[in-house]
Image 1 (cartoon, rainbow, N blue to C red):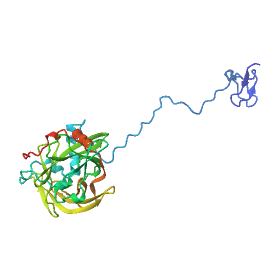
Image 2: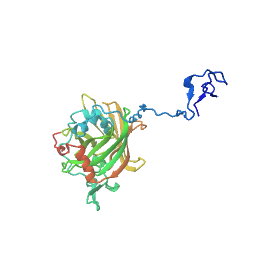
Image 3: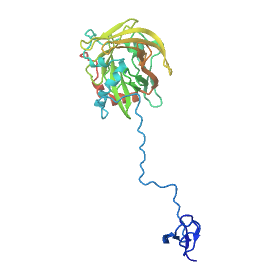
Image 4: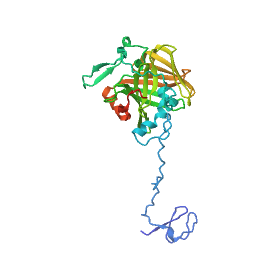
Length: 342
């Protein structure tokens, strides 16, 4: 059978000798011949797109609660510890950034340490039978002397979690470890480390507490030869003390209440000390709550409507684990001692 000729206009079948289509009159050209057996390929409605441009994945959302640190350190160690001071001091001492910047202290600090610390504030020890590790437990209510500054220091061997909300708008989570470094000076009652996470990396900052005849003091790990007042002994409602500086101004602390019960949701804390800090250098007032054996657990602004620092969890981790955090974040802990030259 010869080739068939089809009209390209109407599709009617024609004979090879036809010049015009008998159906529609379309003139037939030689290239209009198609082999009857040839199957016309249909074009697929779906075409593979070569070298197509794939939209980039959406950038990870920026943490809404914290701006990057100024001059953020590149690695852990001394530089990392020092760089987070500006972030943590407001939380720890309710606006104490200026306080940390100041040098010197009141000249009326007693020259002798308290050799007769109340035995009721000594941490009792219990052996962890599973590991042999020594666990320190918090004193019971019947053992407390609420007039002593040492009562409100943290008990070693604990990890506490806080939600912080800085006055400048930054907020986030801080983990606090309370312990003592191995072979630490006997004058150091407890050391604390505050750890924050920034862009997937941890930064820690340490400070150490000692007691003197008139109360408790703290020493920054980054500046081991300077000492600052914490709480005073002979605590009573209305008692005040201050830190004076001719350049930056004064910070005045006043005991607002004692024996207060505070419910933070996950735990109820009894016999809390309530202290107002009037930071004249920074220009704002903070109300801080200290719990026996737990240190500062909560702070707010003067109105009580804005939380600055709030404990959200607390667990006993043991002295060895707490000790490891002190070693990690306090490179100068062995240099810390209350040698009366500070």
